[in-house]
Image 1 (cartoon, rainbow, N blue to C red):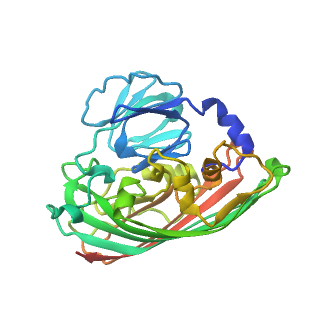
Image 2: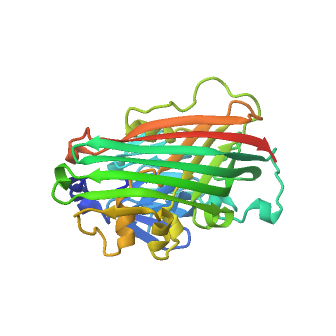
Image 3: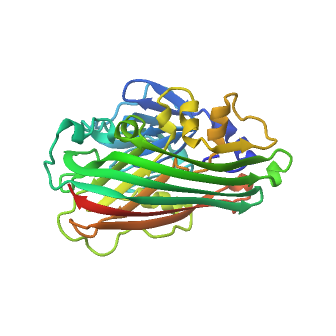
Length: 377
């Protein structure tokens, strides 16, 4: 399960499982349980949807049509009190909505309006390498390196250790400003070039709520995706803020967060020069097709145990039991210290709480480490 381990937690949230509404820019609507959003994507149930494709988010029973925005050129929080707040960055978790202005209880927010991204934002445009576009705002750089992710758990319902390694190539090509740009701070989207992955699973949930109906996952999977697949499937998304001079001290992401709320709050802070964000996820690779399209990326990992299928489709059931950040939810955030910085390294660690229904202190721990070589193109 991506953001909780427990059957009791599922039961507690079942009443809200189909109450959130997403209205996409193409006019289509999706309803389900909105688990989280960062600056790159939102997780609705088991589907990761690029934030760039969203126009409105409605909470807890919202029904179309959405309200009229006060300013169609900016993000807005429409509160249940009737107030409307402009926002640059929007990040949310199950309890709160975070922006650069602070935080709001999620239950106090009725709608969020998201501005249309400029042409080419969100990974939707063709690669500039294919189109021949040249940078208009500065140098282009190729990022090449490795990302390692681990999700571990040993608690009242069992244990697991999932480990993933990604060899990733990205193009930092400042030719098109993205939706996070401001007058004094330009932001640009990364273009994914190649991803090679290796994922291993050792999962045994056989205690507590799973004592009679255990879930086990074991094995290893590997594969590679090229630029076209990465873009069309929104597998890798990312953005970086322009840096013209060495960065000031302070403001870098902490290496460890005590709670998931602290981690989400940091994501919601205003962008700063040299700041970068990169996310990796497989869910949207489905592209509206069969769940087997995503399941096949995990070929070599098997799901066994006495627990019945959570979904009629065995492929969808398998995806349901994959924990957070394997890879969906994998998120890198850091900051360059100098415009021509050649080595980019960082790490993040944070818990994903089981929730009050599961005892509150039973949590998964996610650790992400990355190291890139950044070279002028």
